[in-house]
Image (cartoon, rainbow, N blue to C red; front, side, top):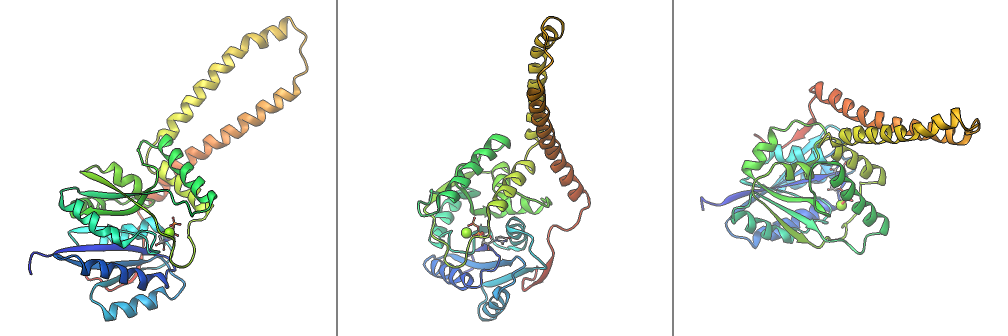
Length: 312
Ligand code: UDP
Ligand code: MG
């Protein structure tokens, strides 16, 4: 057949040696049940220190569907997905995690919506009752903070499992952000979008690479790589506090001329401590933006490929 469409599956993998063969088999099974499509699986080995690369090289030798892009070191999940999209050749590109938390069985549904004309088919994960409370709670806070602070509306549970049309992937290729926040960018980019909800599965093997610290970092990155709304908020906060201090002035004058106020050590210390902290936070926010400019302005490559079996 000549009119078979090629679908690329992009999978970032950071030490997923046990999961790689499982997800590859899962995807293969799905495509065996789908006629009219060819597929390629692109694993992006994000500085793996386990047997992942050996597994991938071996699999690539035995299958013409398996491809890999090996990073020179760990560049992080988001850049791994970006690299996969840069190397993908399909008419549609599906990004998914390598730990079976994004069920391959959903792929036909994504493709179906894509065939209906949607250029971005993204997924929303239903809340997983099996996850520990801490993980569910942080995830909820993550989306709330993000929506409030960045000028993008992300649904609770929006995940990195999605299908993008070639047109959208080509737009993404033009992005050279060194800290891309794909979930937000995908929303921001526009096009015809459709959301599919799914039940997340448990991680097949290994443990989550997102620690609490990494989550906070992703949220901060998400907000600051997205909008300058925090800077505006900080200015409003400044206005508010100046306003309040003006209201306080009559009392200070009264106390100075009429009352006999000298005490007030506690309130003074409190105020100094409070505003000291506030100023540090605000400086930090400004600092993050300056840091981002610094990193971006150097025009370093965003990721470095050590080896790949993809010829473009
Ligand atoms: N990942 C990556 N680089 C990293 C961290 C994670 O490529 O620095 C990959 C990881 O192998 C997995 C996906 O990103 O395929 C999602 O990571 P994880 O399952 O640890 O995140 P969670 O599901 O807990 O959000
Ligand atoms: Mg996972």
